[in-house]
Length: 328
Image 1 (cartoon, rainbow, N blue to C red):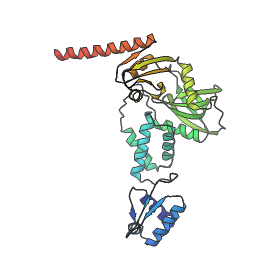
Image 2: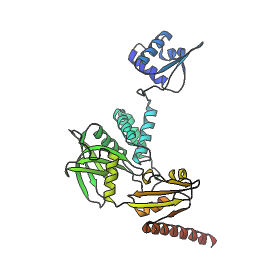
Image 3: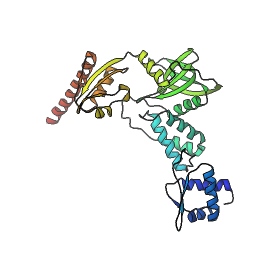
Image 4: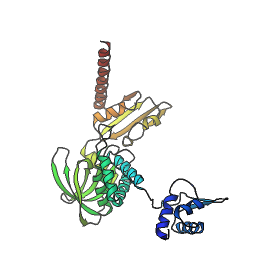
């Protein structure tokens, strides 16, 4: 192989597999001399790739972790697997999948060859996800990548939007940030028609497309997209004071409640108390508290106590009905 750039790319692709490569095997694979391999290794190091060499009768090379992540070379199967995984995670707002994952998906899909984009779309269309949260909203990953690209490129965006009451409207915005919560994706943007900042649920956004018109990003009133979203949601829905004690350690409760509810304070080795303000429905709060899977007591807020009581009664009746059906 006499084409040096092509040979370097092939060498880098081999080194990115998690193993140590003897110099003789690399030379055989690339049909060059061991001396050429040593020179190519030095070229990769000059480009910032941390290639480590081992001494010995045979000697070998492997790529190790460095100060920065170098560009990855993926084969077809690897590229498809990563794209499908990112799409699945982004499309269902899995907790922990943040805007960075959507940006990665946008970058990957931009450079995927058409044959691989077709494979990813085909696999996605043939897969039915199992939603484990009834209140989670499914989002088209393509919508997320279009929005993420417009944010990165500071490009105005048009889309159709369906409000909570079902009203349809056309919007033109200057997209600022995507914000992921445990259940949904939101777009924070400056709405040119309303001449004000707005938040949009991404699962209600339809057919977004960039207009090609660039803009200079405006300064967000709060300076932080997540804080702006929280403030907007608080205004849209009155907050509920939550005061609950749990018969379980604080770490046990924290692992079973969304971070948006705050942190329970320990009151003993096997008990804790949660005091928070939440902009969620009482029905949802009652269900989340029940899912903690331990004894708990709701203080102060009568309406929340009522919803918890109704949920408990409904579950008790359901269990009793099942026993009666089984005994007959």
